[in-house]
Image 1 (cartoon, rainbow, N blue to C red):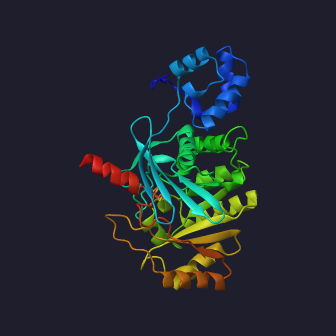
Image 2 (cartoon, rainbow, N blue to C red):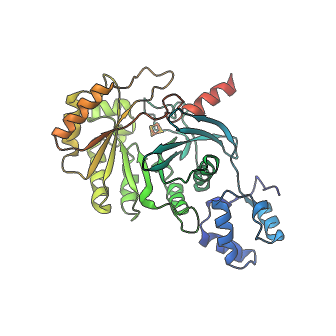
Image 3 (cartoon, helix red, strand yellow):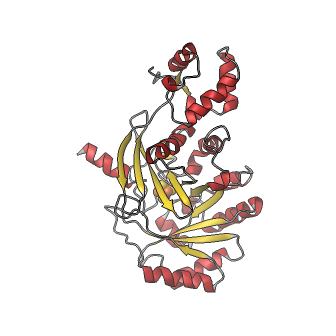
Length: 349
Ligand code: SF4
């Protein structure tokens, strides 16, 4: 059974309540909504929804879309990290990265095709923003990475291609979908949203009452350095960003994670560490120190392990907890945007 590519209803983006309304419109009993929702969460196509009447499946095929992404590319790292390039129904592609930790399997997903935030160290932003993903397209990444790997996804990170708070409504809908008990039932506490510092989005998120984790990609401890690395800082400088982060921690009672990518000679000195510690004093937070994954065409290099250890030591002396993160998948195109970019480059050669 073929789905209609022009149809406006994106079945995988609908919550059970909305499917119930749709079923009512189609003269179907309400319980069909849960059946469809559960099939969608398992990655089934309409033709596989064997407990639905054939005429309903036919009607849905005419009026709705239910895309099954293709795996355009898959890279498996020595450490077990898997990077996927998934097709979207309009011919675009997005990346997801599956990482295996001692505490379980985590999936990093994309929220947009490309990104307009312009961070200087990032491959995802090189071609700008193409479009935002629907909630269903974010869910697809979780479902099909799980099906392909045969792993249960224990936690999710919205830290792939795109700025999640630049696609706010779809991201919130996605969180509701993926955590729904009739679907994948992934606990909201196991979902982490990473932002480059879109302050109005952080403030809005603080009021949603969602027990998710907020990560802030800070990467620099002062405005001069941060504005040079991350143009978003010119609109929302560090003082505003820290106020919003403190508010999020206070309103949700949840620790904010500060992501700090260590770039050799740029932001990795003990003086930078002291500046960072002063910024975070008294805040419910934890710092992740991340080695930079080099991006082809960019000159920046990762700080070395001794600089990272020294940085962590200074933070500790100032009362700020931190973790030096392992470099996962450094033998594949692991930094966000690199697989999509290398694939697009090859296609255009
Ligand atoms: S780091 Fe994130 S926010 Fe910045 S350009 Fe890359 S994808 Fe966009």
